[in-house]
Amino acid sequence: MGGLAALAREAGHKVTGCDAGVYPPMSDQLRSLRIELIEGFGADQLKLKADLYVIGNVVSRSRLDNGQPKFPLMEAILDQGLPYTSGPQWMCDHLLHAPHQSRHVMAGAGTHGKTITTAMLTWILESQGLTPGFLIGGVPLNFGVSARLGQLANNQTRPLFVIEADEYDTAFFDKRSKFVHYKPRTAILNNLEFDHADIFENLGAIEKQFHHLVRTVPPSGQIIFNSDEEGLGRVLAQGCWSNKTSFGQSPQSQWQAHGEPSQFEVSLNGKNQGEVRWNITGVHNQMNALAAIAAAHHVGVAPTDACASLSTFENVKRRMEVRGVIGKGSGAITVYDDFAHHPTAIRTTIDGLRKQVGSSRILAVFEPRSNTMKLGAMKSQLPWSLEMADLAFCHSAGLDWDVTKVMAPMGQRAKVANTIEEVIAQVTQSVQPGDHILCMSNGGFGGIHQKLLNALQQQAT
Image: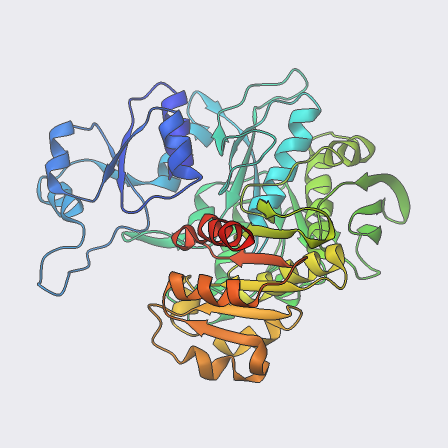
């Protein structure tokens, strides 16, 4: 929604917005764009006399324990019959497929890796002079903002627009996945696992939504899919009416990577297309790179050029972002911030760091904050997701399930705390010179990164 606000402002609209507890980097971006952010959802905001209210999917008709509405502004909008729409619908009607100009939408979908894959694709297009528009659920370091409109490049019939295509539902009044509104001509299907247990009953329900996305791709469009993913195979088996190209680790994949994650060759149908050399870790990011290269190829970017572009890709904020280093040399302690919250994402993130740091100790600090994790739908997978870490520290506040019991298979390597302060105390008591502290959450995590750095600095002095 913050990125959408930035696009609306760039398009010439006056924009304000409201939310609760906004945290960096989005709060910083909104401030830099001079978009007024109002704390809370009070009905008094009607005095702004907005022409249109764009409703995010955090808003609901919920009531508090005292019976009062959780979102009074929404109740007032409904009572007074004021115009409102969802974010994805507004994007479709006013930016992506506006009557005066339709864009070539390039959508990146999947349970994991949407943000970094769309950031990679956007950077490839940008570095090749195609000035794409984009809306990404994070802040790509190559751009410093999460969204922009872009321009029409000379060799394109439509402006290019890259969008992170989320399968979460659109709004309380539109329970379809967000991505069905985007109508892409280039669609990346990166992977597919069970997630969002608060809105999906099972994996089959998510696959159904992914097939709705497939149905919106035109016959001249391209679907780029991970052939290693059984769920995506089931989705495409339901029907596909567009061109397809595959990537993955299996021999039948058309796009493949050969080599280590930090330096690998890219092939298409067995023929070498170029080499990527970068500082990004993890086999999962090799797969993300293949998807981005294949998508760029669909709009005319030579794979050799795409590989060269990725060699200057700088990642996304909160994706293995180094927040600080305490000390020097081999004894330095490094603190990282990462968005990982699904068990598979946690495991692949730790695996990527492990390949980077070798035998150095990794201290994984995490909070099960997503709705899926709060419900405990995947709690049994946590020990598996954390097994490559030397120590694991879980912030357990707000959970209705027994974290200590779930983490018991890790024995003394797992510690649980109910407050941020307790977590910091546990980490500082356990840390050793040369350790790597990896903080993982899809929220602000109570500012734990800087608090840890402050505590470590104080301990060092």
